[in-house]
Amino acid sequence: MVSFVTPNLLGSLAEFKNGFDNPIRNGQHKDSTREDVIRMKMRAHVLHQRLDAVVNRKDFSVIRSFLPPKNEYVLSIRLCELQIDLYKIYLARIRRIQVINLFFLEYFVRLSNY
Image (cartoon, rainbow, N blue to C red; front, side, top):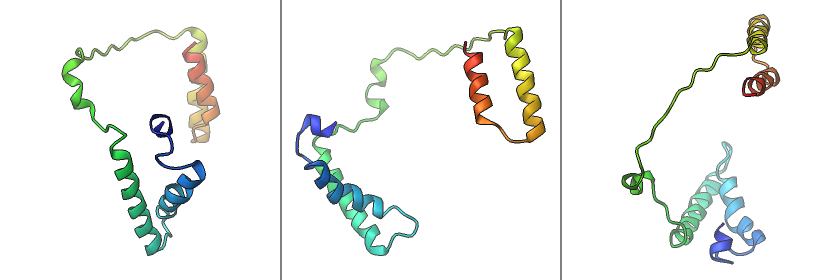
């Protein structure tokens, strides 16, 4: 996105990785050396300074007064017989294995949203 707005602000991809990405990543590990952490902080600071003129960092409060009030609705829809049966099977399976099987959960969610 930054390259689109201001081309070459951060250099080529290789220059960006060598100058910012790699030093910042290297300093974020649990076993990073003190020098890596210092280098990470310095490069993150330089990156922040370079992007400050380009990236407009604002939070939600700036536009809150211009937006209409937020309305949330909760719809309760009865499950069909097939969905009820699948949900019962799902609950029985969880009780039996005591571990949530994400594949089965994803299948159930997709079927429930059908």
